[in-house]
Amino acid sequence: MKVLQQTIASFGAPLWIESLEQAYGSALIARWRHLNGRLHISTADAVRVCLSLSTGQQVRIAERDRSLSTSVLAGDVIVLRPGIPSETTLEGDAEVVQIFIPPDSLGRAASETLAARLVAPPGDALKRAAIQLFVAVRHDDWRSRAVAEVRLRDRVRDLLTAPADDEIGYMHGGLPPMAISRAERLIAEAMDGPNSSSPTVTQLAATAHVSTNHFIRSFRHVLGTTPHQLVMARRCQRAMELLRHRGLTIADVSDEAGYSSPAYFVASFRQQLGVTPGAYQRAVTTKG
Image (spheres, helix red, strand yellow):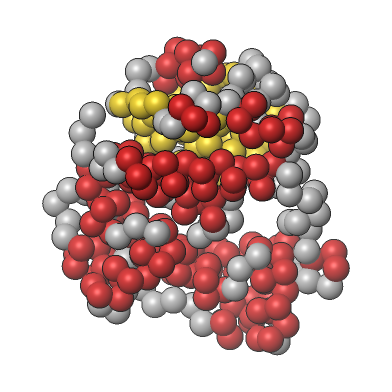
């Protein structure tokens, strides 16, 4: 794939790279670790699914007349369609898994206008599928990786054909973007330190100056998730970042990420991502 060669030219050789199921086209999965970098793709010949394994870098994606700038957390997923000139700029240390999918294996979806979010909502099916595929590949679990790849392709197809107005909820009686941003910032700040308590729904509603019930309904309408689910997703992403450290035990990560017990941490992590914390830790700490 030309896009693979362009990526290697910009970011260097991947830590590892593998082919996926041939029955679904010559898809590839690869993992990179790099410092500040700029990746320019003139016209990609594959759909790119980019899964971040680290937290802290700023990412800017530019495609023709649209762009996205975001601070990336572990577990965030970005999908870029083929055939459109794009540029990806990363500031800060980054570790990313990229999955390259041939457009013809997705049918017409790959050629449609990408109207949905470039960054998949926390905890959604696309994120689960990407993480499950990554873990299965690193564990040489052929059965699981085949299932995960089919699931990932289905989720990418869904994303490419999503309605354009999925993320414009406040225009139909919801909260203005600034109110949502304030609530998200409060949640992010609560997740920054160890042993930090989660903000209550009452506290979040107060930032928007609305009732608790109205806040919950509007929050779900705009972001597609509840405040509690977002708090749990952010806690999970903090755990994912901690799991990259080989010396930390599951109990250590559970405590640092603010879970009530290791058992609850394992159950919650598996429910959100479809893999156990131990399996994920082995995948991200395996060399090569």
